[in-house]
Length: 358
Image 1: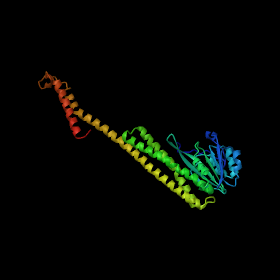
Image 2: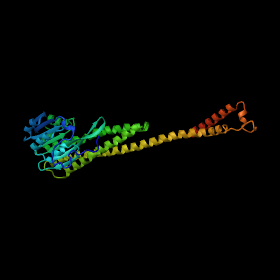
Image 3: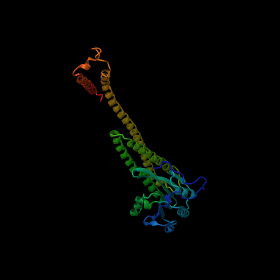
Image 4: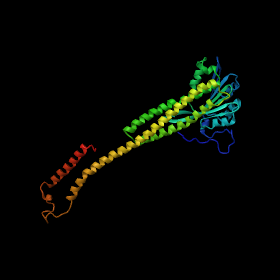
């Protein structure tokens, strides 16, 4: 999980320069096109750039989705066909952009962060969307087809709003899916926090501390993705936009409410993880106190025993005077010493136990 994304372009590179600096550029491309309007519907999958070109100038609503990591030549072809601004196209190829919205003369450009869990470790993937007069072009570098539910709705519901309304409603549907994808991720994080709470109370090992720190980092990463997403939606709602109708803003307002819910959940889980850290430290402190209590009891019991051993370990000559440790000459002196030592230790243990000291 990378909290800090490195800039892909080298310093001094001309704006709009397209190039790859990572191996993910070798990921196979998958292009899909949906050309629709009301009862008219065409869908094509696994197209090449050449096969998709006839739909670039379609008079109907067109949704071109690019799955994988396109190279500079593929991106340049798509950008030229739709008149995409070179600076926006550069942001597509340079993954790791923050969530944002940018206005260009012929299109609107939006970058989103899609949260995903890889082996219970959180990461975010970049999703880039262009909205034009009658087209939507989306890019997603991940391996999973996250927009399959939207494609299914377009295919199976010819009377639905997706088919009957313009491309700005399709944009809303894509944004809404990405925003709502945070809820199952947060649900998983919540379950992990509950499990961590049980581990902290039962057996606060060092591995539990590592899990708590990992959870806090994941929540920071998710918050970094969601906070600008909320601001982006607020911009869509507040400002006048050439390609976004007022009727669509009603639905975007609901999407904005979802981002607020996501932020509230993130803040709650951050407080919960901080509380778990405090509980962990308190558990360690209590555990150390219990250990010190046992050691103190043991040391206290051996104080009188050490005194007795020290007294009878002195080298006074018992033949020189009858007062020099006469107990050493008793027939059962050794046994009486042990009886006295055991009696003192047992009595102290009994008193400590009655007082609840251990």
